[in-house]
Image (cartoon, rainbow, N blue to C red; front, side):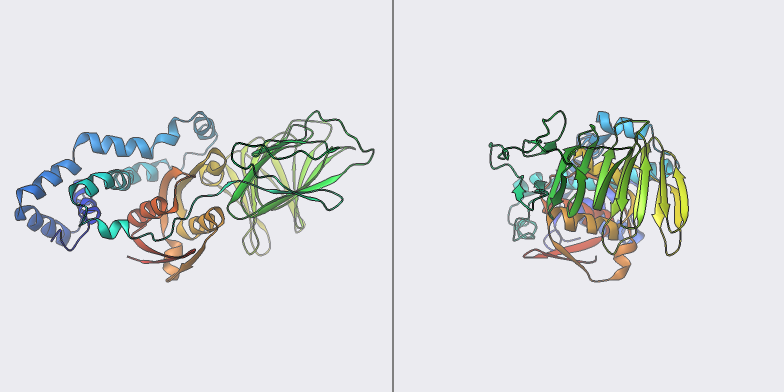
Length: 388
């Protein structure tokens, strides 16, 4: 291997593949030739395999497991894919260590690393808390906080807002009639809302939630387009309904995620409690760790890794053996970009990864490149992905 023809990340990847017994015979021979070229190459080889670098890389990868919210979710997840995750740890180490070594590469030889620095020509930032509130009279209020300032409060309306959370609890209702409000989240945005009954909802990018400013009568009902995670306040006398097109989800006090983006199969994933779904003259009941997915004619229930579907509410992207096609759709909505997939085979690749949701997109793509063996190219806000 000629280090003048290969980036140091490519060399590091080969070293780590060899370390974990994943390198092919031709790759091993190539590595041996490269090591014979110079003593400096041997020093770099030892640097990559040093215990400190491996531990630091895995610490970054596994950081989310130490989070209290993640621990709570893990206790409710079905462990059927635990073995896959364990087998994937060597790859996780490879990805994390390579990313962590980037600074060292640059210090060692800035000229040889110039190609890595020039990969991303445009800075694409992650999404942020922002939304538009549409009142019953048609008024539209932008809820994004500017700098350290708070969003303005509309005189006479019964909510509070701080630029990240819209709160309807314990407000004075100035109207005798119930007002219907709509919370619209653009691409590249997310927002939280607490309804008048203390139900908390995380609304994801490119989504819309319609709800009353206060609940009256014998039921509580909201309408969802896109994706949201619900923690429904318990009220045995008034069940909570989420209407998703012609599908209804009924709960009493439950934590669950609903994904219902256009041109995608609607999915309900249950974390805690119990939900009943009615659709197409069919009724199914979910238990923790189960997911109901819309098919052509019926709802299909299966056990899933809950973290794949709810990690986003805790500022993480958590993907465990998840299809790359689904991951790319998540990135499109969160970073407000368009992704062009050059080969449909790419969509069916599976990836295990765990990284911060608020990372710049170049680091996220770098992780995916080395984990899934694909190559990304950025042109303005278009991302092209090809097989490596």
